Image 1 (cartoon, rainbow, N blue to C red):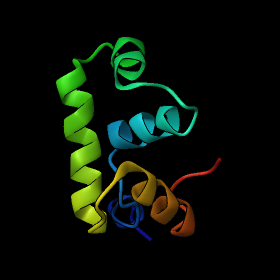
Image 2: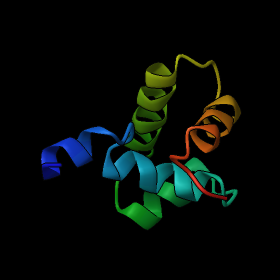
Image 3: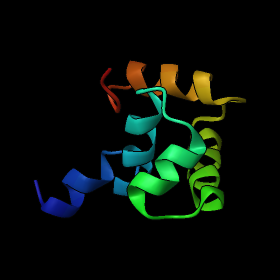
Length: 74
């Protein structure tokens, strides 16, 4: 298996994963932005992008799906 194949099996980008790992720790958008040195708008964009990828309507639903898919551990 080539490394490019290995990377393509993951649904989330590195940054999206970081955002959601903090989200499941009950961090707010502001907390996440501060911790990752990005704007709150960027945090919301990452969350929105993941929700689109998963075709879900909310953050909680996205978290549930990511856990089911093995993309996120709690």
